[in-house]
Image (cartoon, rainbow over all chains, first blue to last red):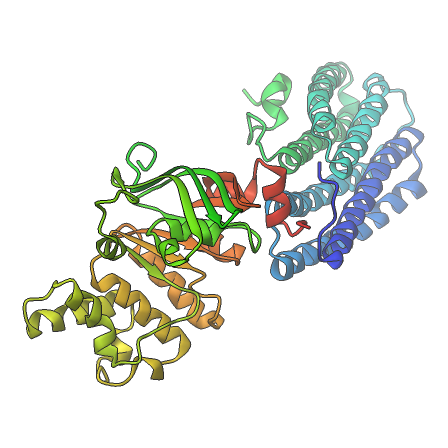
Length: 236
Length: 255
């Protein structure tokens, strides 16, 4: 959107540092989702432990982003697109941190899935994980490039994630009815699917922030999350 | 609403200094309930344009104004317009506080006296007290009204000048960088005063300080190279300006 730098060069540098921080967080979160899903499929306990541990880094980066945003607002009094981008960065950092928590939670469940037995719904989960991780990566590219069209495309993909969740939910229900002995295992997988679905919602929220930062306009339907489209997820 | 019933309107106003065009074809409505801020880089014409509202440019030998400026529908530049009367209705406060070298009381009483607004001493006392109260200065000076206005602090002097402008019961107050020579506390008092005066008078303020424009105004106009680039709600101008030139200026990318 803008091409010229600020008269005060230090301001540009501080904005760049904030962007880098967000990008680093996004990369870590995206990697954590992929890695947690791989560990889940391959029953890689050691890998899962590393995912859980790596989440600490995301927490400290979020704190760092908060600190920088407060400093920028206090010292630079940002306005217009600068203000919008800085506020977006603050919110995005918080969202990425939560995405990291979901990835961590998925990794924690790896050791609870002791059985190596084939579970049919498990065949859909890796694909769902791949899509949500991709959404996180793409929405952060959109943030850096201030590309509102790209951000909106990510938001649109969330419907696909919701469809996956609905299918997996039904499949797991059926599976539990048929194999009551595997209810514990299935319940864990249900949480995994729910976490991925939430990650999709969070990526969508980031997309909305990116759109606002880039255009100054709010996307319609703000404040609703993906749950309303996900019939199976809504309690009767 | 100001849009349907503005206090002042400018239509296709250009101001020249000799051959040089300082303001280029500006049209704007000033709302009666609003504080309107004019912002823009030095030399953008905002102060020149402001001074066209009460014909302060008349005092500059080679200045010439084209277009039409109206106060409640009356042509400000009509030949039958009494300029002294106009400047009482459209008062002005300048960047540098400029109290008369007279007593605090006399500074405020001067305008009402030449306009014959007070019938006697008691009425004049009342006007002086009311004006100083509205300007937020009464408590600080009520026991030393006979002291010289120039002995006050810069911030007090500026509030004295605002009291002086208020004393003649104006309809519009034009402020040209009213706080730029003041420290942050005195500035905050002026801004609080502007907030309190809003509604009673239409206020137009020229300021270099963008945060000040954001704090005190409801409408903001951005000028650049003599032209009006963008005019809109202050919130919108500072969060989502439409013109690239506005955005570059308020985010510090100008030049």
